[in-house]
Length: 68
Image 1 (spheres, rainbow, N blue to C red):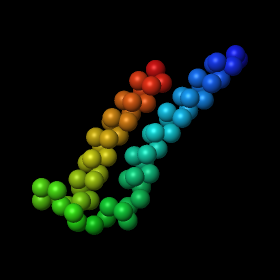
Image 2 (tube, rainbow, N blue to C red):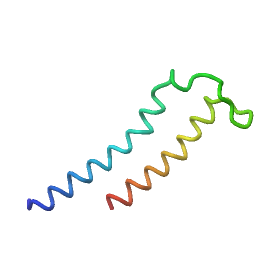
Image 3 (cartoon, rainbow, N blue to C red):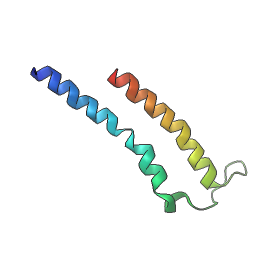
Image 4 (cartoon, helix red, strand yellow):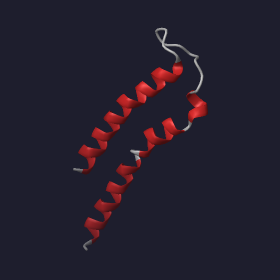
């Protein structure tokens, strides 16, 4: 393998680490297990998880286009 190819492969691996962020953020349940603060009457637990659904989709798209 030539050196440039190895460097590009290493850079791709760093992009894939971004996919761990939503996993860790939703895995840490004690952080978001409470009802406060409410956003539009919706308890924190629900809107925090819904926010991560959207952020996960955005991060997945970023990683996809960066490694394409």
